[in-house]
Length: 169
Image (cartoon, rainbow, N blue to C red; front, side, top):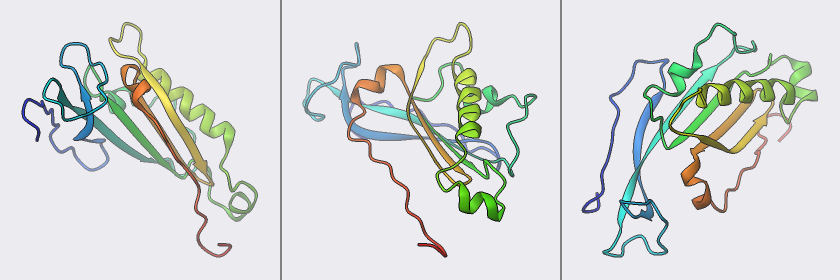
């Protein structure tokens, strides 16, 4: 770890819970105002340890149940992680018809999922706000990436794509 960098870690969670960890990224931020500096290793700045939370969820083809409290799952503490990566499997039923006709995913199901996630990430009176960096679907899979709003200007050159494998690849 770089001298002066602070790192926050989470304990390992039980299977089925979200896993959280920290990365030390090569983006330098001033400790007082978090302003971006062009070179990450100048002596006048420190590297910031970003809190990252990765969550996965298998919906087994069902919509998110309205009684599920996903806020506790996505934001286990008041501040929330700096970067949140959410992967969902079986967003839709994976029958043969779905596999052939909806190779880019189900836009309505994904929109409903995104709405639920964004409501959970922005509770009233919350000190932090999240911005969606990308959402991506493929058949029954969905990937959502959110960052704290102060990090958005530093996200660049994001590349996402689908790679089809299997019988029709």
